[in-house]
Image 1 (cartoon, rainbow, N blue to C red):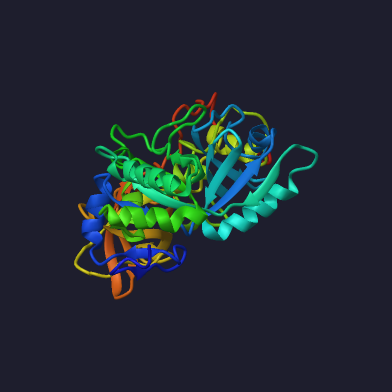
Image 2 (image 1 turned 60 degrees about the vertical axis):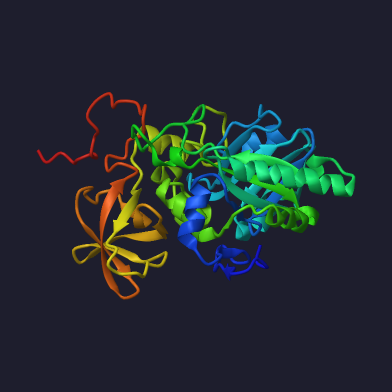
Length: 383
């Protein structure tokens, strides 16, 4: 939607779409109300076809998806042998294609990895010419209804089926705890429940026509600044922001939606199970409420300090229309939860207080109780 009047281009990892259209706060309010649509067409989409596609993805990933019904949504992770996150994807199957939506920079590597793992199964992997529109499913979900109406109109103009235009819709399971999952953020009212989101997957060749129909119908558009602000406030982890080469899903409370603790063997399963059952993740996600006296936000990667010691890094920062300046940060698990922190900002340090996402005890819900005292290590006898 860059041709829309007032569009300002986003930077990486959202390059290629609009950050905002001149009024980020208004866009955010409209989006939160379920009325606006966000252009997320920079995201990458990988398709898997063939009769073995779901059972095959099940064996490779952290999530149980072999029985996924057409139109049902899921989220999965691909891990390394130690249980660290390498890829994440939103998954929805239409009965023929399994659509995997991921970060733009990860689409080609994800497709290449999957292609190497095909062996003799009936599966085929490809990057897809499919664009993504984002909506919040609040109120009457007018944004999603408007996309469906636009797709129907474009299909009629082309004498095509509506599913040839609007391929499918993925509904984010966050912040629910899916079957086989667990939670590290044990709160009565998870903030993510206020802004459930969805992706509308539109055929790439029809995307411009769908957007044109939406604009003619007067559907409000919002930029990625609005989308990201709601994501930060929802404590929702993102591959392109919260994940580095050490990230375990426990640190981000990602066992809610992307990990099945009781499914069969997959790469990284042992690390996931060991950390959940016996250990504690070395780091933890927190949301920071930033001092709003400085109008500049910290950059992703900015140092978070306790006294003179750096104890973590900012991963995402945003200006929320109700909460003000907020950020997600990855901290050492040992950082006390009730201390004030300092965040490195463009114009100096910014004071920050924590809203706890993953607790400092590092225990997920349902974690087995220890059967006895933990042995700190073997000691040599001195007698």
